[in-house]
Amino acid sequence: MAPEVIRSEPYSFPVDVWSYGVVLWEILTGDEPYKNLDSSVVVWAVGNDSFRLPIPRSFPEGFSRILNGCWKAQPKERLSFQQICMILKGAIHEVDRISKERWLPLQAEWKREIREELNRHLQFKSDPSEDQICRQKRQALDEALEQAQKRRNKNNDLYLKLQECCMHLQREREEVARREDSVSKREQIMAQLEAEHSDRNHEVNHLREQVALILAELKRCNIQLECLQSQDLTQEESEDISRCKKEPTQQLEKSSFRARTCKSAPKVVASLIS
Image 1: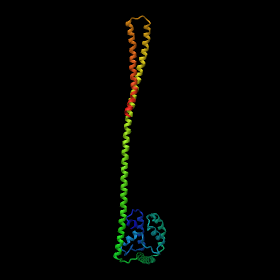
Image 2 (image 1 turned 90 degrees about the horizontal axis):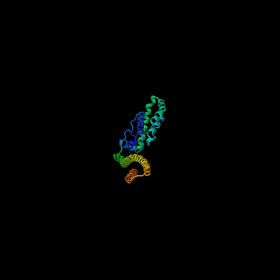
Image 3 (image 1 turned 45 degrees about the horizontal axis):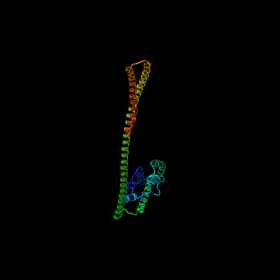
Image 4 (image 1 turned 120 degrees about the vertical axis):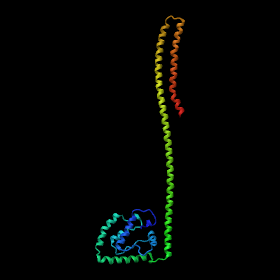
C-alpha cells in the first residue's frame, strides 16, 4: 500500500505503480513482503516514508531501477507504466542470462539479505514489545486524526465560500431581472408615445389642409366682396356681406387653435411620464 493511501491523502494512478513494484519484488525474490513483521509497525514505517522493501545488492540492475522508480516518496516522481515497459525490455535480458541452476540459490541469497536488512533497519525481531507497538499505533492514529481534521476544516471553508458565491450570484440575477423589467416598461412607454406622436402628426397635417382650403375660400370671398362693394348696395346687403367676411375668419381661428393643441400634446404627455 502506498504511503499516501495509508495517510488518507488524495491519490491517483501512482499508487498502482507502487503496488506494481511490490508485486514485481515478490515475483523476483519469491519471498513474502514484510514477512514476520507486525502489520501496525509496517503501516507506521511505510506511512512515514521511513521504510521500503529492501532491494538486494545482487539484484538485476534493470529491475532495481524499476523498483526504486516505483517507490519514490513523491507520487509525481514515480515512473509511469510506459517508462516501466521501456526498462523491462532491457531488464528481461538480464534475467535470461541467469541459468536455472543459479536462480534458486540466488533467490535464497536475496531472502537472507532481505532478512538482515529488515532486522537492521527496523531494529525489531519477530516479536516486538507490546508497549512499542501501542506507541506506534497511537502515533499513527493521532496523525491520521490530524489529517482528517485538516481535511474537514478545508472542506468547511470551501463550503462556506461556495455558499457565499451562490448568494452573490442570486443577488446578481435579481438585479439583472429588475433592470430588464425596467427597460421593458420604458420601451413600452416609448412605443406608446411614438404611436401618439404619429397620430398627432396625421391630425396636424389634416388640419393644415383644412386651413389651406379655408384660406383659399376666404381669398375668393374677399375678391367677390370687393367687387360687390364697388356697386351701390342697401344697408341690409352691406350687413350680409360683413357677416360673410367674419364667418371664414372665425372658422380659421378655430382650426389654428386645434393645430397648436395637437402639436403641444406629445410634449405634455412626455413631461408627465418623466
